[in-house]
Image 1: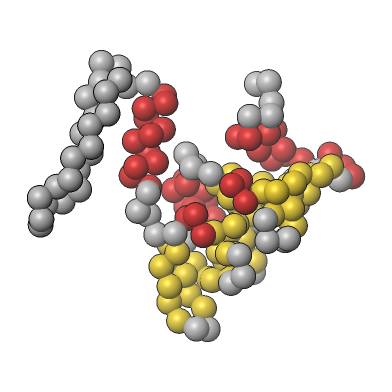
Image 2: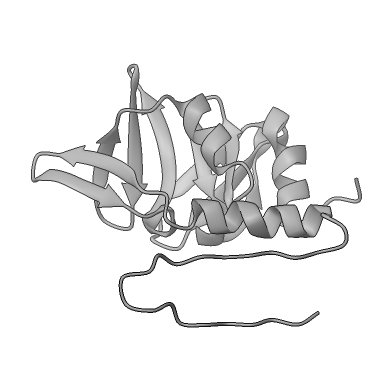
Length: 148
């Protein structure tokens, strides 16, 4: 495989051209990452409105019919539904871990077992989120920990 990187002329738009004999799963994943690379989520807080990059968001949580993006230190309300966020980021680092939480697996520091076949994830900022037992197999697969 040959990779060619060119700098566009002033005023030209960035462009990615993929020339391949077969569009496999890995290439589709790369294309999806490129598409979502500039995806931003609008977050609302008492300080104002802010554009959030997915890499800033530790997890999304639904509480009382509202959805929040929880970052390292700040929390923002977002206007999307949890299922919409799940669809938007399904090919990235986000994974649903309960009916009300989607976590960014890049921020998981530890996973510990709990009673009732549930798990607890400790995030890089020290927060803990519960992984419901029905979502454990999917998370393990996303993390590459399952045989299936």
